[in-house]
Length: 100
Length: 181
Image 1 (tube, each protein chain N blue to C red):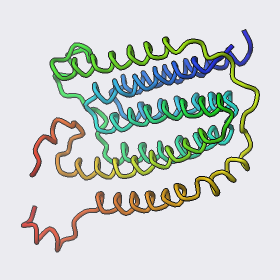
Image 2: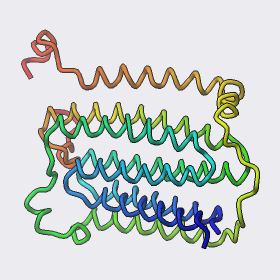
Image 3: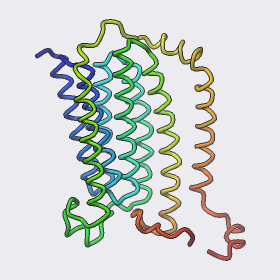
Image 4: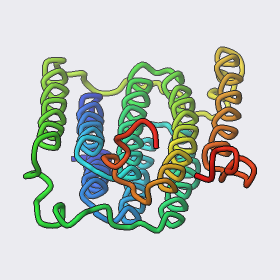
């Protein structure tokens, strides 16, 4: 039988993978993808709690989270393109100076 | 073991495996494609949770729109390999200083989450009632959540304008004013 705990643990695993990706990877695009993994883990938590409480609010919040994720992806990728034009690199370590 | 349990473990394994491969890949294109697979598995989990609306927008919006945007940028930048020669030689978990600290932090987060969940006790089965109908969600969205919904449109507008301004190239006149940079 699948309980709420199962979904919460799965969500925790996914969130940890996303956090590890942000900490370990040295590629701006992969870091943005890891943030998406974390957002999805949180979405899963919202839907699971909404199901456990028998309310639609969890699903509605997921809707808003997806909107924010879309906005974040659009702006984040625009920044990545702009940075890549300056340095020809996607490594965050090459963007260490405040002004160039 | 019921079919629901089998489906849960199947989708969960796909989601975790694909996510792990996303952060293990060197080529961002494979990362994006694997993340789409992970989102497909999550969509299956939403179906198991009686949330067909979320399952469908997960596929249409996330896999269909956001990930295609990522794919588009990866192909536009045409810089598939991040790694320098140093990174080629050293295993990701054996890299020095900050990276090892990052791995440690991620591990601590995983342990903490596990500990918090294990202390929560057994939550038991899900109750019978659940909101599956899209019309109920829509009604709630346009009554109780009408204001956040409208604020969302402002957010999207700001993000759109911001993305255009950030990714735009300088016009020749701006370049001259900045001193030929």
